[in-house]
Image 1 (cartoon, one colour):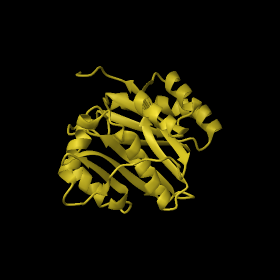
Image 2 (image 1 turned 60 degrees about the vertical axis):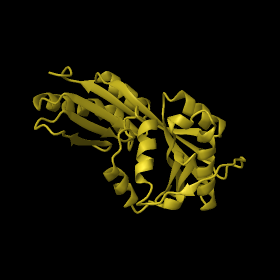
Image 3 (image 1 turned 180 degrees about the vertical axis):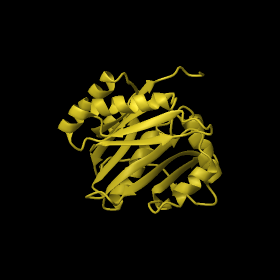
Length: 245
């Protein structure tokens, strides 16, 4: 079935706690006609395996995914928005930044990241191994990993990424954050502009980022900076067994 891929995500226990189903709109008509039957089969198999949860992962999410999820008893669990805007931005800003230095800045970055994103499902609780893995990626470029320091401390950062595989290539604000001790100073806006101007300086014509759909403050900032919605990434969850059973 085009558009359906099933992967399992086992934890440290011998029983699979969660099954993830990823749906992509490759053929909308076929997805609408056959997707429900396939999801029903997945749910039946999940019960046989005593899996607690089944998660439906859709990007880009469409009305078809909403209909399939609802018809099979799934509820929306999380939504990310991908926003884009043309580069360059053409806004003035002033902020001293410097590039990230591998081997020197990991500890300070982890402290700020984990303080700023203690609530985030993906970004919270990062360890040095995770950061080192990103540093080893082919796309990693420390020149686009901008740090802002105040009073001898890392106050905030804007980590950018270039998607060379897209046509045309596209720049991303990969992670941007301000330490809670330095919030309220307008650093977030200037850090985003610093990142976008860096990407524009590489000759890229489009900047993008992901943001949680319920992050009202961030959405207001990105709207003010001219970002527009490109697509939605949604996760729907169906609990087959109550937590703790």
